[in-house]
Length: 421
Image (cartoon, rainbow, N blue to C red; front, side, top):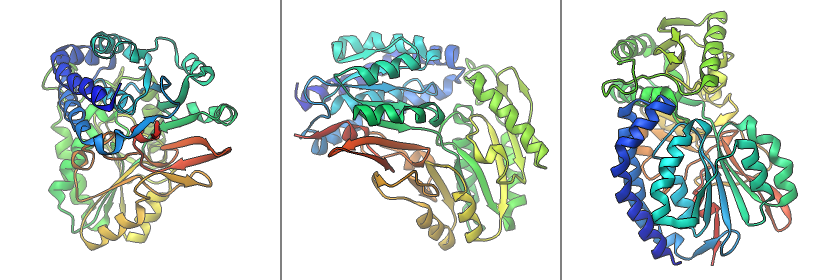
């Protein structure tokens, strides 16, 4: 099958997906507790990204599967999404691979729905795995026709597999958490910064790896910024995910809820001030704002996968750079302001594309946005825009010329699962 043949099928998928929008909205609300408005938006974004694959011919048409003709790539996907997962699968398929995909267990019904409209298009070239995560990893590692394993998830769950990939020589690509700094200087456009923070932090009830996690605001505008932020957060509509007006719905993962509870307890114990929210009913985490957070707090060191803001003030560029770097995750950073902000952004950003590193590299970020909303900087991601991070936010294990190596930084899955013809 040629690249043009595969592209034709992906373009057909872009046409088919909107027909299943109501079903995707229903199952995402039922199984994942996602607000229907978020899923509706996600379907539109996914169709746009699928159509962008038309612009990949110049770098994909002369490539072949990493493991040769007929080889497969195993992909394990995270629960926080319904439609965007199609972009990941399509990018690997377009590179010429057959695909074995596994959705998170709570998304099994979504996987079944996806399979129902994939099979007429892709036949057996894209198949879906119904076992648990451990059996998926075991089978992917031992299967001789699987050349690469891709996992979207939590770093602690996959780090123990390093020995297996060293032994087999297979390629492993990981995309993981973000504890993204969001930095605002006094000369920033506050309307732009606040709007991006509200959209980025509370979409999907905060359950995205690229949501702002550590909010650093210059002391000169700190009180003003926090006051306006609280006013906006108060206006969020909280409730039933099936209600089209709901903006914050229950968190989909019990584990994430328990972590948030622990993070809130830790924040209070370390003198953080919960000035809004802090209430949790079942899996419904009410929008929460914590001010005067310190870097030692769990909520500033770990991913907060929910609608909780940890905010802190800073005084100088040097201080905020050091604090932004003081973390084991390096997915994305956002910086707002003039010349100082520009200098900070340049300091934090890593290289444009993934590259070999001697060890996990901390204190650098795969994407750094300067005075640009998240939606703008993320357009084309996984298609024509390389994404990924440093530290434990993402990496590649592979064996090249008999030597095992670690690679970090932004990447395209289509490139990483293929090789030149």
